[in-house]
Image (cartoon, rainbow, N blue to C red; front, side, top):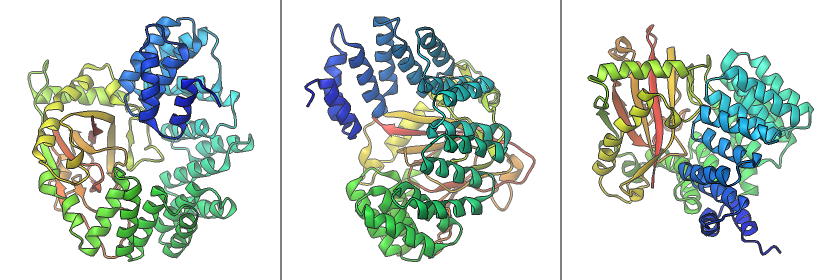
Length: 498
């Protein structure tokens, strides 16, 4: 057994014991003369707990201490890319290449960096270089296929990327999952469900595939098939939070709300901050009349709208919003929605807006600080999974923009990676908003498929340019479709306590 503390830290990271790993790497990275590996491992551990800005400090230190290390520049480029700093990531990756780095993973970092910087042609070329070096790498193929879909809306071309990877020996399960998502994104969900059903039968040991097949069957109204598939997964992993979450979903659809609530509660015992389990626990509690629902869906305390003030440097809010809209339109480079996201008939930026160097986008995050802190304070105290985690401070975990075309909408969804989630309105379809159907409004409380009993939306908020809506990440929300010939553009982000 190795006595190297960094070997121990690596093992702890692999086991998900992140705080223990950090306890080992912190003093080693803070040493006056840290090793290359200590700096890299500490950065990895920091990123694993979401502290990307801190990780960048140690990556920068590594490039200064080991300036001719291609690995150090690769690591820095990867962190810059994670932070949405595409232009800087491209520069760092170019340095890595100059110092001899030329592997598939590095070309994947470059692909993501170029995409973040707005160079989509360059990103595609980098993906091809990555797949030339590792044609069997399913994750890279899935990323590239999604880019092909978003740029061209060509399902066949996107699927061909996955097929080439499969023929080169790529793992079948992740490729099949990606292919099914592409079918669904292209409006051919029935084909995706059929594909997953066959795949689950042929690869019965892959639990992720089994769960995806169960969900696809449910969404196509094949509840009995969904029940059978989730039972297989539960028999193999009875204490898995992910399996219990899927079981709760399917029990609820089958009219077994009490059982759904029990499964969600069991999952929360293993994973008490799991936003997806809280979302389904709330839905099941609503179906059976359990008081947990009122605690989790306290609309008066937990959902609020704030109209921001014009940031410094802009005389009026209208002037600021015009500049912000122009900045966002410049980075909406795709024609179709990502295969794995909730929007339809629109596009989404795919990299963190927090890394943008555009003045209007940078000003946005300053403008929303006050309302976020106001909202956190106004929620009050409580034992629920929102108020119990309050620290008085927060970190933006992800931020992106969505632009919807006429007929566009968000499917009802929640954000499993967040704590507080948001919708900020940059452009609104004002004629649609005044319709009797509340077209374009954000709605809350409605799950994305038929349940027994039916659970319609309970709460609506009218969008307005410059308005920020904040709510718990586990709360169902979606957009009422609008049909007018207008645009709707938003910024969304997730915040987590720190």
